[in-house]
Length: 81
Image (cartoon, rainbow, N blue to C red; front, side):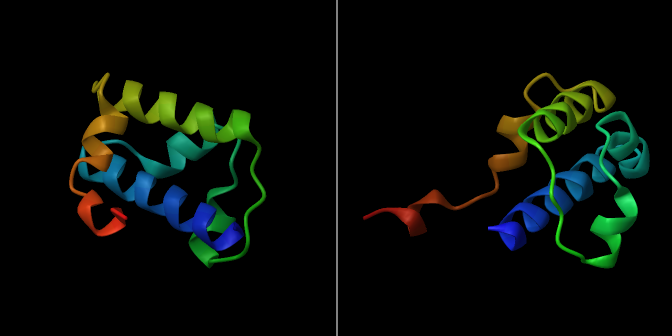
């Protein structure tokens, strides 16, 4: 599960950076050590930190639908039963 969480956080930060946000600042605001994410080490973040990252990314990008726009490019059909 740690790998999935790390991939999700890195993708979220990359998407926010494409929208003009500073990933290091987002991590700092969310109390997440950006160096650990960059180095590829396993991350252990709390649900509150992840929630904070989502909220901070939405605020920093001025996109109140940030999560929706982040997930939009995903092809959910491949997950269909």
